[in-house]
Every structure is written in C-alpha cells, then in structure tokens.
Length: 117
Length: 117
DNA sequence: TCCGTGGTTCAATAGTACTGAACTTCTGAA
DNA sequence: TTCAGAAGTTCAGTACTATTGAACCACGGA
Image 1: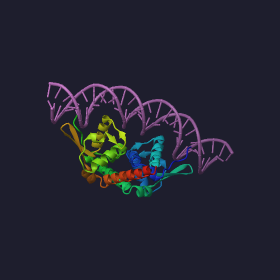
Image 2: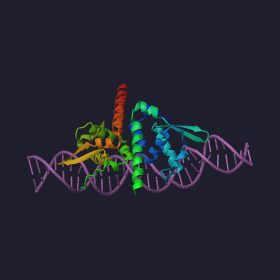
Image 3: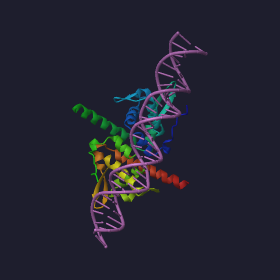
Image 4: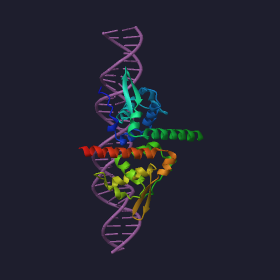
C-alpha cells in the first residue's frame, strides 16, 4: 500500500479545500471529525440515512486528506483520522469555522423542514 | 432563451456554494464581482493568463447564479452581474468573507512565489 | 433591416467520481 | 503459526459532470 500523503498547508489551494467540502458526505464526515474525537473510517459506513460503500469512503478520506483537512494515521488494522484545523486556521483564518457553522445552520434548517412534513 | 434562475438563498445548500467557488476561474470572477462594481461576462474572457471561451464563461456564470451567489440582469444586449452577498451573509454569516479572504491570501502568496522564480 | 456585440444552447468529447471485486495489513483466537 | 475476520486500499468499468466549438438568439445603432 502506498504511503499516506499529507501535503503542507502552504501547498493546498483554497479551491481544493472548498472542493473537498463541497460534497455532502465529506462535509458531514469532516464536521464530525472537527468536533474533536478521533474516528476511523468505518464510523461513517452510513451517513445520514445513506449507506456508503467502503471503497467510496476510502476515496472521500483521501480527498479530505489531500486537501490538508485531516491527518490519517494507521493504528494497527484501522486508521485514526484527526482534523488539521489549527494549521488550516493559521493559513486561512476563519475559513473552516465559517464552513462548519454554515453546515450546522443548514443541518438545523433541514431538520426543521423535515418535522413540518 | 430560457429565463434566468435565481434561487432563494434558503433553497441553496452550502455544498452548492462551496462547489461554485471551488473552481479557480469562478472564485476569481466572484471575488471581482464582490468588490462591488457591476460586470458583464465579457470582462472575464481572460482570467489570469488563461483565455476562456465564452460558452464556458456562460456556464460559470450560470453556476454562480444558481448557487445564489450573483444576480444577473439583462441590460440591453449585455448582462449585469452583481453579488448577492448580503443575502448569503444573512443565511451563512462569515462564509463569503472567509472564502474571499482566503482567496486573497492565496493570490498574494502566489504572486510572491512567482517573483522568487 | 442588417450588422456587430454579448450571451446562450446544444451536442460531442474529455475528465471525474462511484462502486464492486480483489487485494493488503493487522489482530486475536485456536 | 496458521487461520478467520475486520479495516482499508486499489483497480477498472461504468456513470456522471465539465469544457468547448458551432450554431443560435436578442438587443442596439447605422
């Protein structure tokens, strides 16, 4: 297996970060990781009410990783993913916070409008 | 020609905004429009040092428009594009500001490293 | 009414993303 | 040790999205 790639934040264009977070599954995953607890990939085999195949999940993690958003470390058989938000914050202040907050706002609004139905 | 679609901000998912701004050409265009002046599309027939075909440009504007980021109005033969950032700001506070700022930081860093070469 | 300018639409092609199947790596049990 | 199982990755085929040239529409002015 090829080694995990963790680019320096300086080498990550904003576009890559926005692209990584422009997928509903990936923001959901990332928002969860940012909350602070360590996660392995299998935590996310279902996101919302969708089942995600593990090959897809693996790609999602790769994209988050290569956008400099998370750090993945092999721990035995599994993988521990932690957020790199301090680094991102240093380079692009306020960016991650605003996106995660926007995601929360949307999630709350979504739950409200679901209750109405 | 079909009428221009301007969704209500409430109907725009964050993912659409991030996706719209995850393209280098589109952020560049949007950053310019946010600065406040009105623009028609042809202003952007070259972005940076790339030539953009006008069909492509038209699609980029459509994506920005359908992400709720800009408002386009026909003025005679041309199109005036203005930013809807107050509305976006009301729904997703801090988001646009952080992204535009990140884009500036990157542009500055890019110019610096080009000078070094 | 015709031309030029500014945009859009269409359809073909190029480029990404998703996913099942096969594989690797590690752990724990027998 | 060996084997089964759990956690991920890789590959390759298919499905989706983006880009772009060509043809078109819409308006304004000569």
